[in-house]
Length: 246
Image (cartoon, rainbow, N blue to C red; front, side):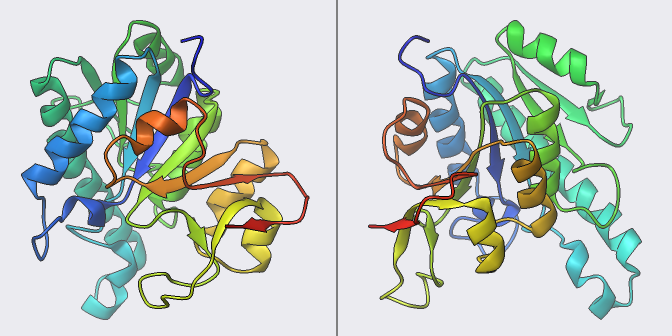
């Protein structure tokens, strides 16, 4: 633990990250890889909370085009996050780590109700906690849920795993000349409309001075390096110094 920069983290994963080489749904190879990466930091003593999106199964933002009202669509999306959470829970427990799945929507047959004090107790006992169902309310994204859970449990950082190496000034998957930020302030993220997380999530982190690190989850060892304080991805903080690009 002495060598760790971050000792309690919330890992945010998108639902789309679980698709892997498939067109939709869950690629078990990706889930198993994520589980192994999570195990590396768990073995170092890091307390880990996880929030997963549901976009590989259903996105509430698409509801209107399908004739479904937004609130119902978001509730369907919350259930999709539970499917992903169960898949990750299964993969993590298969490699010998005890987990607890908590849901913001009551479904006691498969998950505990979300209680912050109980989540913290699970961390203290060495368990990984997966937070499902977003915030439990429509119109809030799983990015916002990750920010909310991180603030509630007094996490040191939110680490957002993506397919790219950090925050860029434009989409690096579309623009080969996109420049990566080494660090950037919450305010600049909002001003530049960089869409790393939704505005509510960024604002919540800013208000509570909670750092965010955006990194490439698909690179083996990146998560391990990050919690040890090595320069991985892009750090978002309240620091108002000139943003650096590398």
